[in-house]
Amino acid sequence: MPRRVSEGSLVIPAVEELYNAPGGELSTSDLIKRLMVRFSPEGEDAEILQNRSDTKFSQKVRNLKSHKTLLKGGWATEIEEGFRITEKGRSLIESLAD
Image (cartoon, helix red, strand yellow):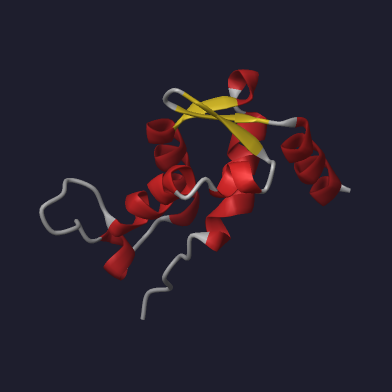
């Protein structure tokens, strides 16, 4: 049975993607693309949502923005099309590399 990805399990990988992005910024669409490569969603996460053009997985990534998950944690700020990593986000990723 395919493993489902939770919104919470996307947080650190999302911050890592911002950390590695030019200027520490990514649009939500680019973040979705990068996380899809990392997670290779399957099963229910890969299904297109009813009356939508996106998958359950991509909606979970979009929820990081709509639920302000990265902002509440202080790991990123919101920019018009996506996110910009904060110093706290950089420190988090650098502490994980130690």
